[in-house]
Image 1 (cartoon, rainbow, N blue to C red):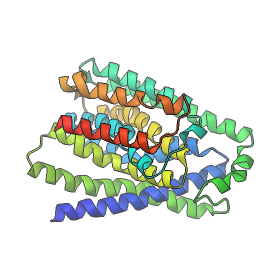
Image 2: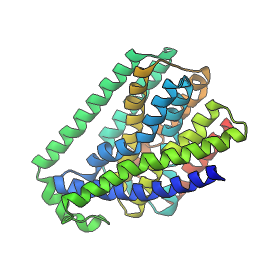
Image 3: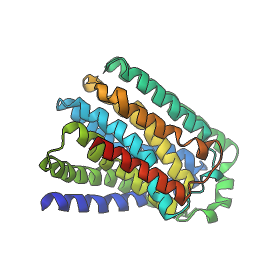
Image 4: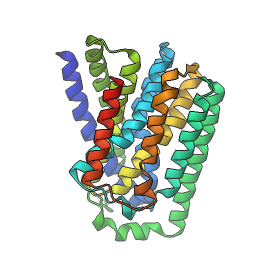
Length: 318
C-alpha cells in the first residue's frame, strides 16, 4: 500500500513543480530579455533532468551501471515519443512558429557522439570528459544566443508579445520568479524520487529484471518531470518551451548525466543496447525532423502516433 501512496504523491508533486518551473522560466526570460526557448534549453532542461542525474550516479556507485545507461537511453526515447505525444493529445502544439533548428542539430550530434562512444564497449572517464566537453560547447552556444538576443533589444520584443504567453507577467517580482524556479527545481527531483521508489518496488514484486526496470519504469519515472513540464507548457500554448525542454533535456541526458556518471565508475554497454535500444533512441530523435525543419505542428494525430510508438517499444521490451 505504501508503494502506491508514494507513486500518487510523487505524481502530484511533479505536476505542481512542472507548472511552477515553466511559469518561473517564462517570466525569467521576459525579465532578462531572453527568448523562452533559450531559458527552456538551460534552466528548465537542467531542472527536469535532475532525477536522471541522481539515479544514474547512484546506480554506478551501487554497482549496477546498466541501470544508469538504461535510464538515459530509455528516458531520451520517452522524452520524444511520450513527452511530446501526450501533450499533443490534449492540444495541438504550434511548433511551426518557433525556430529550433540549431539546438536540434546539436541534439543529433550529441546522439551520434554518444552512440559512437557506446560502440567502444565501455564508457570510461575518458568518454565522460569528451561528453562533458560537448556539454560545455552547447552551453556556450546557448549563452551566446542569449547575449545576441539582449543586444537586439529582445526585452522590448518580449514585452510586446506577453499577451501571447499565458501565465507570463512582466511585472512579476524577482523574488516570486525565484520562488517558482526553486519550487520547480526542488519539487521535480523529490517527486520523481518518491514515484520511482514506489514504482521500482512494485516492479520487483512482479519479477522484472534491473535492465527492464531501467529502460521502462525508471526511464518513464525520470521522464515524468519533462512530461509534467511539457503538458503545462502545451496547455499554456508555449510550444517553444515544450519543444526546447525536450531537446535540451535529451542533450543534457547524453552529455552531462552519462558524462558525470562515468566519473564515478565505468559503464559497460550491454549488447542489447547496441543491437536495439540505441537505434530506437536515434530513430525517435529523427522523428522530430518534420517539426523542426518542415515547420509542421504536432497535431493530435501526431500525438496518437508518437504515444502508440512508445507503447509498442515498451511492449517489445516486456
